Image (cartoon, rainbow, N blue to C red; front, side, top):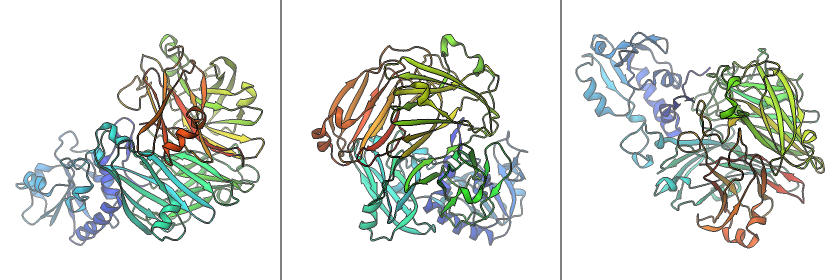
Length: 629
C-alpha cells in the first residue's frame, strides 16, 4: 500500500499531496530527491505534516536521520517509522542536509537560521513549486485553489471517441481568467502532448474532444489519461465534468459518466462480475510518476479475503486493461468484486462488452474511516422520517428492466439491512419491498420495475426489521436493460438525507455552504444533435417538505449566455423526465450551439438527477447521476 494521505471526509483533501503529485512538480521532486540521496543521511523538518506522504512519493530511497516538528503535541508520535523529535533539538544533529518540507526557502531559512547544524545545508521544497503564473492564489502556495486538478480516462481509437464536457462554473465565484493546463498520457504513460486552453467567459462551455485533439496535434490513436489543471479559479477546487464515450461507425456503444474524483483510495467497490457473454475490463490507470510493482494491487470477491494480485508492473501514468474473468474465473453476475488499489489510482472506470456493445461506468471509493453507527436506527422520525435515501429512476418497465444491486461501500461494513420504496411521477407510492438484511458477500439483485409496475423512481433505504447495522454510506449499482435493443447502461451512487431542516452528521448535504442543503444547482448537457440529452429529475423527501418544487431550467449557450428559461414543478416524492429539445425547442438548442447546457436551479429544496443520452434510432442510451457546482 502506498503510504500517502489524500482525502479524509472529516478534514477534506490534503493539498500537499496534490502539490507533490502534479506532473510538473513530480518531475522536479524526482531531481531533488536524487540530489539529496547523494548527500547522505538527511534530517527532515515537517511543519505541515506531510513527511509520510512525501517519502512515499520519492522515486529513490532516502536515508532519514530523524524527523522534526515544532508541534509539542506531536513530539514522540510516530511518523513514517520515526519518532518525531522537537525542532528545538535540530542543532544537535550531525547531518549534512536538512530538508524543510515547506515551499518557501526564505521562510524556512529565517525560521531555522539558529537551529541548523554547522555542517548542514538547508533544502526546501521551493524547487518543486509550480510557476507563479499557474497559481490561482499567489500568496499562499498550499491554498486548495492552486491545485484544482483531476484525471480523466481518455481514448481515441479506431472504435471509440471520448469527449469531456463541463462549463466555467468558477466565474460565478468571481474568477476572471480561467484557463486549463492539460497533459495527455498514452497507454504506456508517455506524454503525448501538453497544452493550455483559455476559458475567459463566465459560464463558457468547456469541451475537450479526443478526435479534435488527435487531429489538432497530429497524434496517433491513444487509450490513456488526461491530466487537467484549472488555473485562475475561485470558490471551487474540484474539476467536475461529464465524460462521453461513443462508438464509431457501426459500433453503437454509448456511455456518459461523471468526473473521476481526484483523490486516490486504498479500496474501491461495486465492480460487477461478468454475466454470461460479457467481458468486464477494469481500466487501471497509474495516477503517479512512480512505477507500481507487480502484486501491489489485488482483486477479490466482495466479502472474501482471498486476494488475486495483478501481476504486472505499471510504469508511471500507464494504463492497463485488466480482464476480470481472467483473474476471477469463478465469479458471475450478480456477485461483486472489490479492487484493492493501494492508493495508486484515482477512482477507475470499468467497461462491459456484450453483443458488440460496450458500456462504461465507474467504481466508488470504499471508505476506511466509517464504522457502523447505532444512532441511525434510532433517528427521530419526527425530524428525519425515512432517513437516508438513495433515489434512482425507474423507466417504463414495459421497455426497460431496472436491476438494483446494493453494494457495501465501507471496509468495516458486514451487513446491509435494506428495503426499496417506489413512486410514480406524481409522488404516489407504488410499492415497497424488504430486500433483507444482506451479508457483505451477498449476490442479491432485484428487478425494481416489477415492484413499481410503471415509470417513476424508487429509493433504497435502511430497514432494521431483521437486525443489521448501518453507516450512512448506503450505495448500490443500478443496471438498466433495454428489452428492445439489448443496450445496457448502469450507474452507482450513495444515500443522503433529503430535505429536512434538522441535521445529522452533515446531512442533508449541500453543494455549497453548510447543511442543511436545501437547494439545487445541477449541470445537464443540451445536445442539439443525436444522441439527445435527457435527465430524470427526482424530488426525494426523507420526511415532508414543500408540496411541489419551484424549479427553474436555464438554457445556456456555449458562450455562457442564457438563451431561455422555463419553470417546472415536481410533486414531493415525484420525478420528471427533462428533455431539453422538448422543453426549449430545436430552435433554441440550435442557438445554444455545440456545448450548450442546462443549469437546473431550485432554492427551495434539494433535487437529485440522473443525466444521459438517448438515440432511439439505434436503441442506445446512457445514464449516470448528475453533478452540481
